[in-house]
Image (cartoon, rainbow, N blue to C red):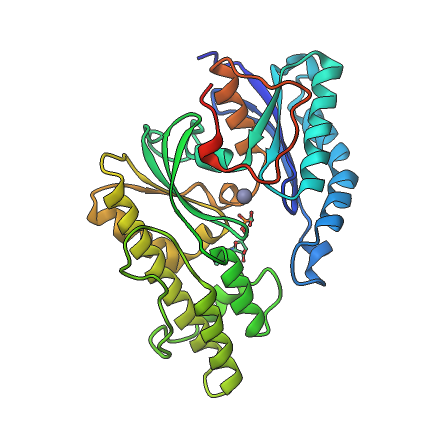
Length: 343
Ligand code: KG4
Ligand code: ZN
């Protein structure tokens, strides 16, 4: 492995505009994230057209900033990696085109990165977390606002999906429950703070798919139950929040348990995505990992959510395996992990 390999990563698949310069030994030369939350908050969710325009507005100055901070000049880069899917097509076009432009102008290889693969590989970034990075194969639980799936990470570029959500993503469920409780968007962190003041056993909420075979997820029934409890006007918001969070944590733990039974021989349970920031969820999943004598690993919170460091790292892993993509590569709004190719 060439430890001085240095890659510029660009992320623009949803509502975070981000750029980072990373070296293969794990040194972060520079990174910046612009969260568009303010732009979308008034609408209670991400508005694709606003997101695309905001990426276009902020990405050039963000890249200039990280390149200045990295202090190596474009000649010091070995490649440019940009998220090319899955995600909102407008943002993907902005980020991928910008990355291709830099690659073309400076004669660098371009890497079209799958956003989910970037989440999946983050824990392998040297020095990001204490201890040695997990060896393949490991189990990934991706728990974000847009994705909710359970993936067996066999090796670089080879993934099988063991289960995914039948309706809402888990972060979406948090956001919808929070909205019903009158909390601002995105509601997950607000709901967690409210839940800390409530009784998780106060209200009996459904635990969708609990105990069912496999590791698919479902959250729409839980959301409907919260809506009913809220409309009855009897329960305290704190108790509803705590009971909702407990139901989600119980369901996720059950699904993770099934997934671990479906994938014997994994070295770790890895959790990523914004919902991995939730304390109750983390504790429940830690418990499951422990009963399987496995470590539960979650990147530091800042890298659980969307960022460009993970894109740069996926780029480095692919580049070091000889991969690169043509400038004619088209962004893919849908790009399931099992459709990836191993370099
Ligand atoms: O991974 P992420 O930043 O963005 C994508 O969806 O790609 O995840 C954002 C989601 C939102 O739904 C947000 O409400 C949720 O993660 N979230 C949380 C917490 N922090 C963020 N949900 C529950 N508890 C939290 N502490
Ligand atoms: Zn993401």
